[in-house]
Length: 442
Image (cartoon, rainbow, N blue to C red):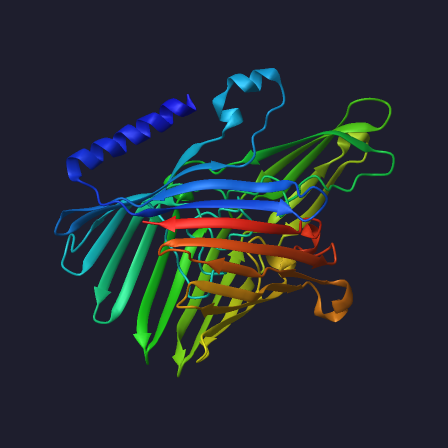
């Protein structure tokens, strides 16, 4: 069934290419990661062909798309039947990340419209953007910061003097794509009374109804002032990462074993954002912040079948909380480039969970940009400044890349993690890796 769907999509694009004569560009990339331990087990593999077909249909109408054809993840072969299924041996998928049409100067001269699946990237910081909340997060690769899924919707942009106004309408809510190994989210760590042991844990999701009441909407006004780009934004939507709302515990025997049934929900949120970016001399500077106003969520644990009643607690307060990023970059005369950001609040954090991070990148291009060294790259996490020695972690990720020919890049890198296990990075410290990548653009 999956192959039939892929074949249909390929046939549709082949037909579009014949009818409209699409212009194609894109790149091919490979990504292998090995754990730094005995026998270097393979931890990640991806072969991706990214295609970007485009075509101007009329003077004011243009079609654009981004399509991934890829083999991602390691084969899951467990029994003889798996050897009869090609998808189990060589996993392959097609992912239409974007497909939309731009209609310019419609219905009046100073209005443009974009209709279809699209990525609406708001914010001026580097990859960590507190105001970028319209598209759902794509956390499949937790080290690819800033990656989002596309959303089916409409973007309307208007131009009044030197102001740019944007209105976004996304008819239905789409949750975030979470990492398979649950490194960021773990809904199984429930504290049970002494003598009670979990036998089976079931996590169900309470999805919002597909109606206009649960649509995602956004508004932004943007203006250049004194050579700085300023913008203010508002989003009415939901947090794409679910939160526990109910837990019911059912005894299954007389030995203290229980089944746990969790229900998770997506909190509604209003988000007010502001950002700017520009340069003072040769030094680039940017700042971006967002104020989140969530709905309050109460968490109930039903222990009534154990004779302990129902426990109720406030798991998400409606009290507003803020995330922000301050950053700067500079290129020295010898070609060394440095990028520094202070981050208050990572993607998955909310309310009292918010932590602080310092992200640094230093790169040096040599031999007419054929060789690029990144001896300093990574981040430092501080969970609690008042008890720093027990609340820190860091990621060190140096890289060397080389371009043997134009448009082709080979990359060798590593990722070393250490710190306290109560931190987000520290939980990953058993996953040190070295990385081999290749990329060819056309």
